[in-house]
Image 1 (tube, rainbow, N blue to C red):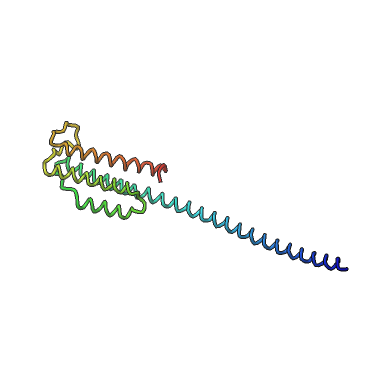
Image 2 (cartoon, rainbow, N blue to C red):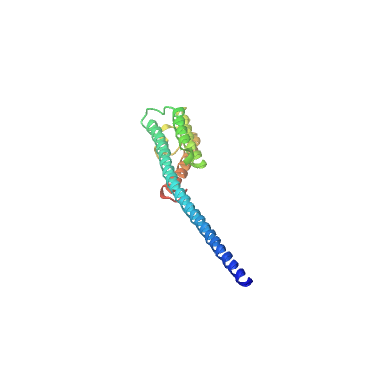
Amino acid sequence: MEDIGDSQTFDRARAQMSQIYASLFTFVGTLLVIAVGFWQWRRAQAREKSKDYRAKRVEYLSKVWTKLSEVEDSFRQRARFGVGPIPLGVEERREVNLLLIDAAPFLLRDEREWALSIVEEIIEISTLILHAKARPDWWYSSMELPEATSTSAITAQRLQCFRQQLGERYAAVTRGLHE
């Protein structure tokens, strides 16, 4: 008779253990589904933020490129059409600096440095022309430069180098080839 009692106790214990195991597996399965869902949600959010960040980055690079082009075009027009280069400097530097401050979260450090260098080189060329260290017409022509304009030529070469670096980065970001 004891065998039957032990058997019934064992069966009840096994039934209770089965219920505990089923509850435990259900709980672990639920946690696993929640974790996978949360992971997918986070990935979707990161993907969305990445799209937003990339769009803002392209937008601000475009604004910086446009502003720098405007500053350079303005200087070339002043130098070419005889108005005489009104010294570029304070206002242009301020405008570019404000734009770079606004764009800072979306631009890399080297991009900000290139943009500032472009403005500095334009200002240096403007100053050289203003103080007659260089002929104003060399900037937009293909005439041979007098020896006195070597400083201006070097500055113009640096300007073109910075402009090319920023332009290549802008093109790469626009095409999605660079973060």
